[in-house]
Length: 117
Image (cartoon, rainbow, N blue to C red):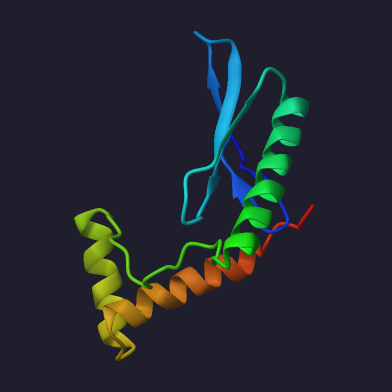
């Protein structure tokens, strides 16, 4: 399922058939903030309330709410794709890191960011 969006924050959407509820957590923050509901409309409302509460709490504490990213991550691809990427990077005289970073930039630019709600 697509994540919920509110004020630039994303929230996961999960379903528990056993508990007959929907639930999720705010993604990419420095803390764990969960929310749950029994309907999609209610889940969106509880997510938005959780974001508002989290931002208010961070402001009161003087704390940065967003998770910082290191700028490095592992990517797993097939050996064939790895070889092809390394080959293309060498042909264009760039590092494999530069080649992959450019591919990610192009994909992000193509999809763009979803409009904020």
